[in-house]
Image (tube, rainbow, N blue to C red):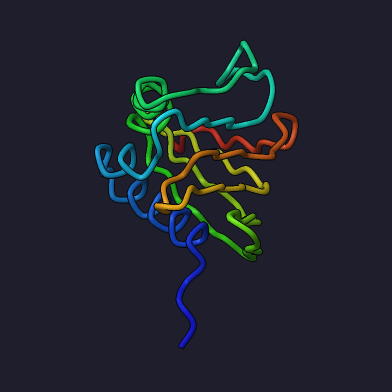
Length: 136
């Protein structure tokens, strides 16, 4: 039986920790100096477009973007090679205010030799974000 690809394993852990609201485990899944771009470039989530570099910035990203919401992942395909994988799928976010967002994209993970995430890059378009208002 073939062992799971290290980048795919790190991506799976990342998604599991987000779903289970395991903040410290999620942060520990990243290497020192890791870089998150979600989405890549300037956006309401990252007005500078520089991303979030280092564990302090990654923790702040969790606190601002992940913690208040429930995030669900539906990965349709995953392609791994070298020390990276690209997951193609949909992220559904159940917002604290009752709204729901859906975004389709490609989510890439690069890992170091210890299997820690060094780069998480999310390819999705703000214009492609579907927003459903709260029910009721």
